[in-house]
Image (cartoon, rainbow, N blue to C red; front, side, top):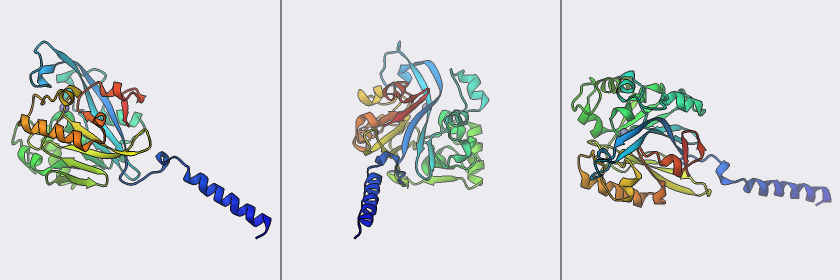
Length: 288
Ligand SMILES: [Zn+2]
């Protein structure tokens, strides 16, 4: 081998070695996501006893209204869709309200880029915004759907808002709703949903495989309202609004086993999420 060829080979080997040293965080990988909590409104003072079973009746807690952005190499997934219909805004008068689609757009995620929305349960503050995302497939537990509504958009249990029931029916007619059959179902690579939280008839929570701050892949649990606050999780207190408090506590125990670390369990309405995960800030908390 001539000196030139040896040098060329060395240069090639060095660049390959350098390529190998590119931090793994920069490499997109199917089934591995970056997860962020995105806050779109705040209720400054809500009775804590409606969130944490047995809480002192004098206590009040701020509530964050949140959607969870799950960005992968080949899809953009939301857990829950927030709300936007004027009647909810008029009724709740939330502070610092931004329409979920516009809050995401301000953070570089256009509504038409959202491929999938995992709806944890049918309450208005989680489901109402589903039709803000024109191309997304909507994932919902079949038992949840069938308990609360049907393909005509009827209200079979008043926990679902009539307009949201009609919206679901029209999304279903458009072929955009995927009904999930039960517990521990992997609905797409790296995202698995679980039942048993019993916030509603078949509320679900999700695990997401994610690249963490240290570069390793770990499991994040998005609890949604199956655990409203860190206080539920950390003091083993069921959520107040549950159809089965023992099942809710068992689900919270299971979340602890599923998460790579208990700090990676993200409750549904706790403003503290944005303190524990301060980056990048301005209403967005990267869970890592
Ligand atoms: Zn909620």
